[in-house]
Image 1 (cartoon, rainbow, N blue to C red):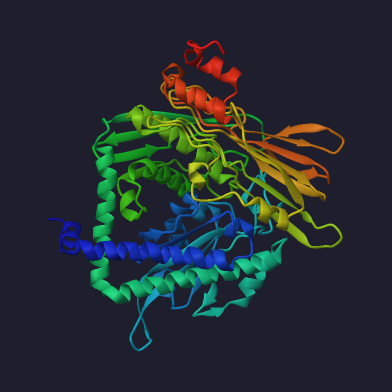
Image 2 (tube, one colour):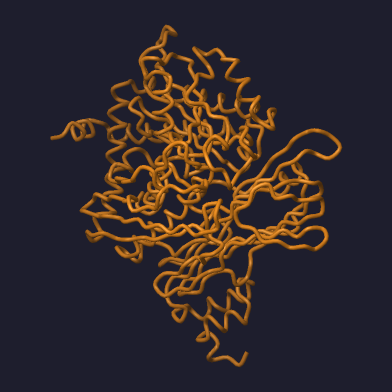
Length: 572
């Protein structure tokens, strides 16, 4: 009998479930504390952050449902932050570490990790042994890069101020030099200062909650239950892969460009299944790119974990066990494993395409398991400027919703986030208009934007921003050249697109572009992609076609073209 089997057999299953749910609740407390105290809509509205608890071996205990693409990177953040300050032996109660090196966080420098070691509190108030870590990674509105948001950086030094693992708090006391350095290197220091304080509140809330869970059950019982929890998560994922035939399955993707040149960047990955073990291999990826689409290894691992956990995780909140069956292979100095000082500001855009390619590959192993391609991008826009009549700087932005692919069980969802941002949100119109100098002229689902099929894709969305003051924009829109594919005979959906109409009527289309001038009166039109269809359109139920026409999802002309069988017995 293995050590893990012995521990899990000795752990009480009821107590294990109580511990698991308590840990999930603790991560949720972190999330709520951060939302309630943060200054930036990108945090409290969009939820552009991750909050998680780890054990002392930096294995995932629990996470709050926020930004999935961050979650698989957080163990790397904790590991690198701790090593940067001298390892576990250099940690003291009350310490909080600031870390944002892109090759360790997997993100651009604006996504800053805050890590707090958690020490068990004794009955006498004395601090005991290290029991884990409370960690949050959140997006700061500006961190002193060449622009608040960029698509054209050529090295990491243009992308923002780097904090290579420094103590923001030492034994509970603020290290003011580090705090002042962080706020001094921002175009919006008040917002960043408020968000730093909120991050500290969040990790402290998580640390206190984790301590309470361990205190309630005792260290050994807690550890036994955690091992049983990990084993259960591992079993869920392995049981899913055991149903798939062994073999090597290929997925292919393509980036529109790298942000510097307009040349497309194709790539290939493979999934190797052997029993319940799965290896996702990125070693055939193209060499590192001169533009910032390079995806550091932590985000490559995270994208892989997200794609697999979404379909093989049984709908459970994941823990470390869910990832034990998954091995990720990368090759240094390539698109999915860049080395310093390669630019990687658009790190997640290649990761999003990798998720779609993973599903494409898995279709070859189990066609009924995966959806057709979604809009394939987070369609992020960032705006900034100085408010008219004053010198107050501002910046805001975020991701936007796309259509999801149809699947064997039904139609794709309309106007929802890409799976990499599945638990994030588009900021409400009321908040966006109150905080920023624009009006939303349009936010609407778009008829005929989905791929046809037995189960059609979800619809894309049209957004229109009318600017009331002069501003600038960075647009990061990807998949403008490649339409979202259908599966099993389903058809393509419309791709993403963006255009700017100036006050004089001049219209210009963009995909990736940095610091686009937006004079007062300019209108930005964002057209997000739909989802591909699943199954042959001729197999779609005629009643469903007519319902889509009545509901405005399909024009009659498009319905007749895609589903002629639905009109064979009518004279309409």
